[in-house]
Amino acid sequence: MSRIPRVVGGAWGRVVNGVVLPSETLPIITRPINITEKMVRRQQAAARKRSQINPPVVRRKKQDVIISCSDAKKNMYRDQTYDQFAQVPLASLGWKNRKSVGQYFTIHPFSANPALQSDCQSFSDLLLHQKVVDALEMHGYKVPTSIQNAQIQSVCEKLATELQLKSEVVLGADRTQLKLRNPKMSNPDILVATLGVLSKLVTNRIVRLDHVRHIVLDEADTLLDASFEEKTKHVLSKIPLRVSEESLEGAQLVLAGATVPRNLGKQLGDILDTKTLQQVSTSSLHCVLPHVMQRFYRVNQTRKLEFVTEIAMNAHKKGLPTIIFSNSGAAVDFIGLTLREANIGCVHINGRLRSTTRLELYKAFMDGEVNILSATDLVSRGLDTIKATHIVNYEFPKFASDYVHRCGRVGRIGSQVNKPIVTNLITKPHEVELVQQIEYSVRQMQPLQNVDANIKRLYEEEKERIDEGRREKLERKERKQWNKMAAAELNY
Image: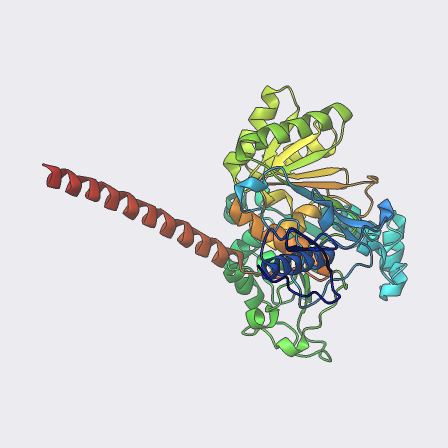
């Protein structure tokens, strides 16, 4: 006879057929308790991580958006800041991957035009001579910003007439060789010239610069780049520059530009005393334009032309002046021919055209004869395109300085366009690096980096990198062929 164990208290109850049964139903264990506890801990950790990555949705006003993305979780809003030790959530972070095709983000206007926020409300505030102020106001230039509406040549001619000064303009379109063979200079008080022509005139002793008292280098970042640095220094070496701020002898040098090289002192150190240089700039120098909408689309290379054609057709129908930028003359011509075949009026400008032809085509665009201009970076500097409403970067620029200057063709002082737009089509992995730099600068509200880079040196480095890639590709192909031949011999 089996013994029935004595049960004292607890969950055990009645005895059935000699078996002590529990008074309550016990839980059925389907997995070990330690594994269950581990799974619970993992789920709790995952929930905490999701709450950190995806914070509770806060409803914000539409006007508070600075960057809107295809992934709304990466939107940026006004007054939003990021932890300095955490990674900034860039919308373009994975754009080097082909799977990112179709993604986009837009930088919305978040501030007024910086050029309109100057403390100088009149030319008198600049301490100009009253005769100069009167001449400016006589021709409709009431405030300093309004003078940006006109080209240097026209402003100079108007002022020279009123102030009884002689002015002369010498451009590359004026047949330089003819001027060298038969020089006719009128001893002007003001000379406006391109660097190439001026360098030749100085070298051939047609123009003397030893009596110059003021010299202004417009687009200084380009003139001090390695491409033009030798000619610029050659011209400056012929001018006796001021040795100090107090000295009245020698010429005063003024450097002007939307981008200024940070190593300016080093570049000009062998020509002048860099301690005499004084930099006058705005707080928005090298910053992304805050008053222009900028859209970035990650598109497939095969659909890029279709995208541009659609934009151009819409601009053609609505009469919206649009500039399409490319990096090469071949691409510029290709865009122009393609759009004309689609019955869209378009002119295209590149460096292979003569200067007179370029000026005629540009005038046709500004006069409204055509609404589409296909161009290289030749048009991105020195031209006052106040009628342009839309910039399209068919080929994204290779350098930050080019991007700044291209965007500067819209949203200019005197423009009547309320909502200027820049559209960027991104297709290649190397373009993504600059896109990420632009997006990062806006999210951090700081200037762009490497804007003053040496363009010629960077082009040479990029060419060397491309050539090295081609050599490696050729070597891999040759090794593959050699391995095939070796395998065939072994099988034989």
